[in-house]
View 1 (cartoon, rainbow, N blue to C red):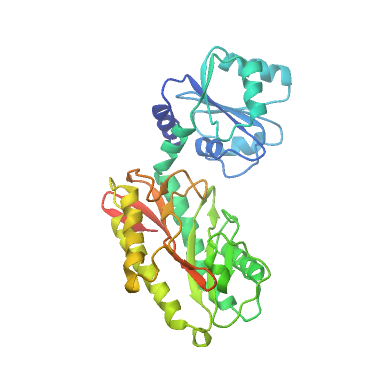
View 2: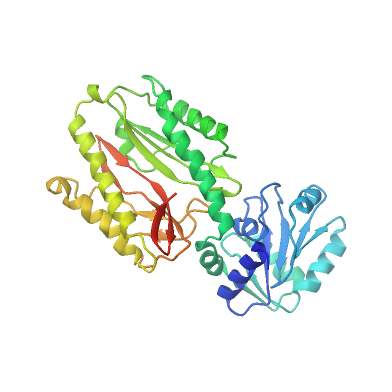
Length: 360
């Protein structure tokens, strides 16, 4: 059984009683379409993928047909749609009277209604949770792709300090980072690169703007290169020209505290460990550090899974008591945020193995 058919089996095993799956890759894209095809090239907008336990049928068009053929694998049949009537007849022949699982999280309502009316399934079942469960455990090919994305991101973060100069804007530095990541093998960015200077670094989801870098500022960069369909998610915080900072001791203490919290979290990231306990290991460290002066400044969850999407379904937080499993790839990103002063976040991507956590 090839890797793609093993993925199909994982989803079926989690989905319950369905006869087949049907995905519509809308203009926004469905990550589960990529999960089950492994395609790294092509748009495949409005293409339909019907998935049975041992065979997949891709209904594509002349724009994508040869792109699909170059990427097909054993068990995937590629059908070139040129006649709408014959297309509907063949899909209906596969779907009519069947219990069909769909990705409700990514299926447009118009597509859902069309499937129900035109192809006459006996029942349509939302199996989004089954996809999330299957994708949470990465296979060898997925881990290889994530490792490459992490390597490009890590190298770009190591070299970006050479671009720090007084007066550069957050937008300019973000563009430089994306260029560096691309030159190191990234096929784009998994999400919009966050660059935050000075007080802006206290805003966890600040988007870069025209703020200019000044001596003594924090520089926070949160970015993730993408290789193939898989992305990294990493954050580093720097002090630019520390000697000219107004309170360098506090800034360095914040950095050291976040580093210590991340180390505690990574040490706790083991298979069968409760995710809430992992989050609490970091939060308790931050709350008790330096006499408790950072209590309450860690204001988000410790991390999340990554993969085809930056937030790939699993969350590590104090309110989610999901157990970690071997094969998960998760972020560990504690932070301290002091409004009006600045913030520190350090984030790495971690693979859960039977021997413990491995920082990628």
